[in-house]
Amino acid sequence: MACSHWRQHCRYGVQQAFLLPPLLLLFISVNAQEKEESCGLWLAPSHIKEREDHGYGLGMYTGRRIVKGTDMSSELFLPLFDFNDTEHPPLREYLWSGEAYKQLVLEVYGNLLFFSPGLSAIAPCTSNNFNLERVDGLTFDNSGVHRSKDPTTGSFTYHHQPMFRAVRDIEPGEELTVQCDDDDFDGGDHTRTLFDPKDDKVTCLDDKLEEREQSNIPGVGRGVFAKKNLEKGAVVLSSPAVPVHRKLLHIMSESASNLLVQLLLNYCYGRPGSDLLWFPYGPLINSINHYGSSPNTPNVKIQWHADPIASNEDLARRKQYHHPELLDYTPERVARTHGKGLVMDVVAIRDIKEGEEIYLDYGRSWTDAWKAHEAKYKESATKLEGGEEESYMPAEEYNQMYSDEPVRTITEQRRDPYPRNILTACRFEEDWIEDENAEDYDMIQYQSWNTQTSHFNCLLPCIILERLEGEDTTTYTAKLVDQHHDNESIEWECHIFRAFEYIYTDIPREGIEFIENAYSSDLFLPSAFRQPIEVSEGMYPEHWMKQKLRRRTTSAHVATPEEIEEEHQFKRKDIEPSYDKEDIKWKKFASPREDL
Picture 1 (cartoon, one colour):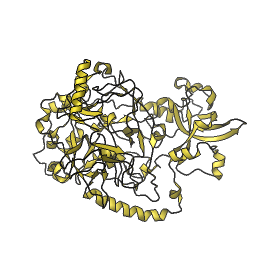
Picture 2 (cartoon, one colour; picture 1 turned 90 degrees about the horizontal axis):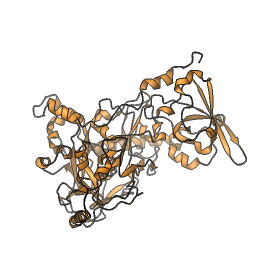
Picture 3 (cartoon, one colour; picture 1 turned 135 degrees about the vertical axis):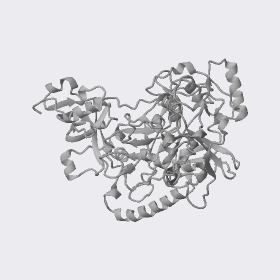
Picture 4 (spheres, one colour; picture 1 turned 180 degrees about the horizontal axis):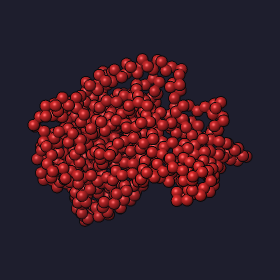
């Protein structure tokens, strides 16, 4: 996605599960073909979520056989840095821990969570007999933008990943389940899923639109295109959405020098004058671009799901996916409500030809904000010419360009420094001082790369003390530095005691990489564009607007104790850190020896 003209990503569908005979599976397949000649992914109410008391709403079924080892489509990776989840908002149910992305974790001192719309947000997840396993491997693509000249810099995510891979052959009709740490259910109990493709609650996800890597608008990244002719008034895409309070997207960090806002804001929808936002987490919708300027014109609009309010009445509670009653709630209550959401429909506002790019009007408030940002950015960019910002290079690009070159020692860096945003970091197995016997260790502790077995478990900044060049190999000696003691996304065994000197020897070149200095990447630029997409006035009731709150209108529904208790049951994720913060403080401040 982005700010100026773009968005990105993926989602899916589901409904009932039993072991089915081959003839019935064939019948389902034939019926699916009657509805659409070819549908690879179906979206429908989730049978597993209802049967296992696991989340709520929609899930995803495959319409075709997925062969073992197949990577699912690349997904948008939206990082949330230093995120405050103490109040456990509904958004937290959709966030994943970022501890596997060790370079990104070191960009902040607090924590890293991330949001991937689509499969990771919709499909039920379990640690037991899932059919799609986690794959951690980010692809970096900033579409060639640079902070010295491009106003879109830092306004869209630069990272994508194929987050899941088939662990076995997955047959048509199966509900997709993804790997996570939860053990809520056994995925093996749901190897076949029965659903009727002719049901109006079942939607094919890949029959009308497709995502392409390049939009027709230069420099904005991905875009969404029509796979066939689409008629005016047709619903071309639907996406579930989660409520988000605007204040939740402030980056709560004492270390950041400016008041910053999460990138997620650019992917949210809302109205001027309301703090209530909606984030759609289905596929494709986050890649629909703003139409920009002539000759492009918008060809779709956003509206709430067209199904009548009674559409949920024939569904079990956890299968219900669209809750129009939220329109009667106060915005504060909507932002706190678990287990309920709304569905957004993308509707064609004119006939759309096959191959045509899909464009949305992001609204007047967005357009005005973008024009003001663009003018201000161009003015400031002229002042950066020839300066340090003009020579800025992201750490990912720096690693690609200089991965085969020797790393400069601290002495060499005094004469020939790396760019201000670049730090050196070392891979290692774990803290080599045992916690329970820390008082027995000397102040300076040495460890060799050669004595470790799992070299890539941990990553911390390091100071390169020495480079030893032999005939066939070059090795390094470094001092590990932990400036991230409060970072909960760094695994406990990777934190080190501040009271000791950690000298790391015999490090090969592949054990050292470049990382971003904390809060220095494009996402933390104070000038990075942040603005939600504007929906039409009719989508927001008056009591959702801030100026109406002072009047204490009586039209907003007040929660009953029974409703609050029911909504609490949908809080599924454990938001407690994997270790006690007091333990970190002990490593950070306390010396285990009196003489240190």
